[in-house]
Image (cartoon, rainbow over all chains, first blue to last red; front, side):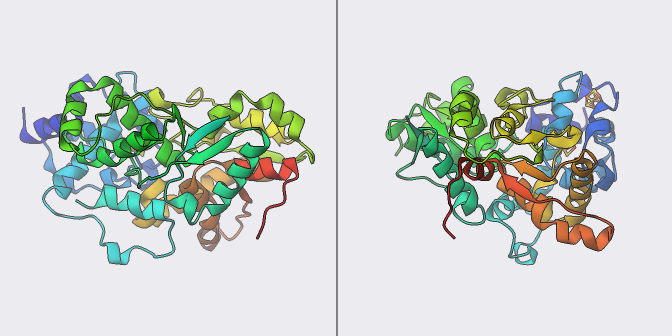
Length: 120
Length: 268
Ligand code: SF4
Ligand code: SF4
């Protein structure tokens, strides 16, 4: 098993080999138009050990809406996989946003949520 | 009837109108929402990593406060707080290993056993539709698109209703004398916290969702989440810059419709 796959499996608790690439997750993902990799491609690249997935935009655009997971016929919870990929960077102290650049007029819930998902 | 009430940060600030209208509307149907004597931020957007128990402590602490105050049920109106507290509570009930770590780490707190039940106000409403109908003084008489977003419905284990086709908000609107429109995007994400880092995603989602509601004949959108409310309402200004032909829609909390139909005057 490549290091990327074992790390993602460890952090997400998900079995990526359950995925048979049907694409249903990507078909229903509301954020897919902003993504550079489809959610099912993210899974495939992790399985192949392709580290470019860690630098991709998709995990950061994922809004943890759980639509993919509830629809997946193989019960793969992709939201957890996206979180695992974000954490690979965040845990190296590489934040995705600088808090001082976040607009001040946002509701608290937006700021606290963004801090949780985009900073380590 | 009295129930524990967890406001969360945003109902005390940006979404004050949600809190005020909800408390008044619930009083009218005989339910007193009693705010916890002490509460903290819920931690927001439940952490998904298997090893990240740290981010779940805040939720568990709030549940301990609810138990201390003697509440069997804790009502959380903000969809994100509801989701976070509910998922943490499920963990407390089902994951012994995680809970033994959390209980040991928070040794200043009593152990928590998952015994508080976390509920959303719409679940309370479901059992009160007759009382609600009886309390209506000014029937709504408009057409509404009920928007649920994600966190009241997913993951499945915490859903307040059928997760692909919920109807509780529609039943409330009809009880208040309004009519509802078909709204296929009612459970599609508004873009959530992308608003802090990648606004385009929220602008696109807003355009899609509001346009879908309009095409189906809605006069307004109804929601229960302060972040959906912001993304769907405030971001309409930004959508207009990208799509000049875009005609927006007003966005309300479901509790605002309740006070309106009950004929309750709100201050301010
Ligand atoms: S829906 Fe499930 S099985 Fe299908 S591609 Fe997505 S993760 Fe794989
Ligand atoms: S959880 Fe993320 S990947 Fe899955 S449907 Fe939602 S935005 Fe897309």
